[in-house]
Amino acid sequence: PIQKRSNLIMSGRNRDVLYFSYGANMSKNVLQRRNVNAKELHPAEIKDMYLTFNHRGAYGNISRNISIVLEHSPTDFIPNVHGIVMKLSSEDFKSLCKFEGGYVTKVYTVRTYSGVEFDAFVFQSSSWSVLKSSLPPTQKYLRLIQDAAKENDLSKEYQNWLATLSYNTKNHLDPKYYETLTSATTKFTFSVILLLCLFQYAKLIN
Image (cartoon, rainbow, N blue to C red; front, side, top):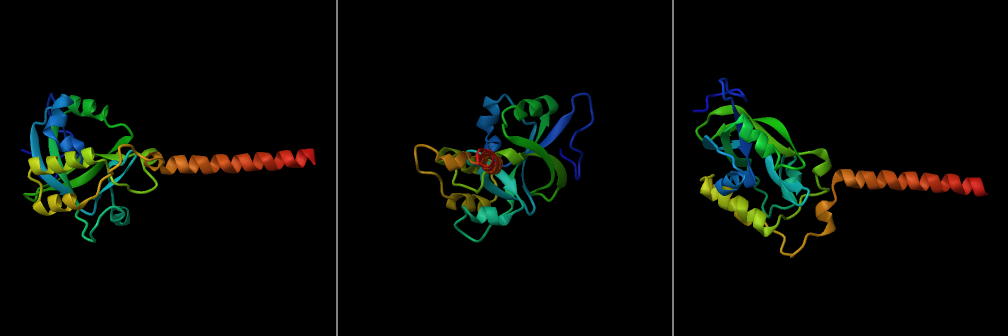
């Protein structure tokens, strides 16, 4: 079993990794399709971290900025992000990383429902994958998280909150679902450079 304040990497010939999932990887079907075998599964949460949908395409992310969550939450009650902490082989974790485009691995202290705390790897959106605002996810993605939360018996309070979240009802995603903070900055920088070039050109011909 996972020990209190355990290390990220367990000792031994076949070293294991502790990983906390809050999105699609909570689903056992998703893990199976990705050929990942979780040796242990424990419901858990991260204090003062919240589920958002501000990853490119409105996929899941976590943030300490509660105002981002309020953009898509219909209530003022915002729970800590809940999910599943699992023990994976290092090879399975490396394999899982290949599916997580636009995410980087961070380390957070996770607390299981039984009160055990330990450090675990978590996927968090990279700076170039964060949207300008949190947007409603697709119905398919939100349903996947809701079903996985029920499948893994996450807290009823958290499941009820997930059930209140709205989703994108359109058959396609608007351009804003791909407008990241980095792309906005790049556009602004390009516009400034273009204006400077035009200004310099105007000076030369006058």
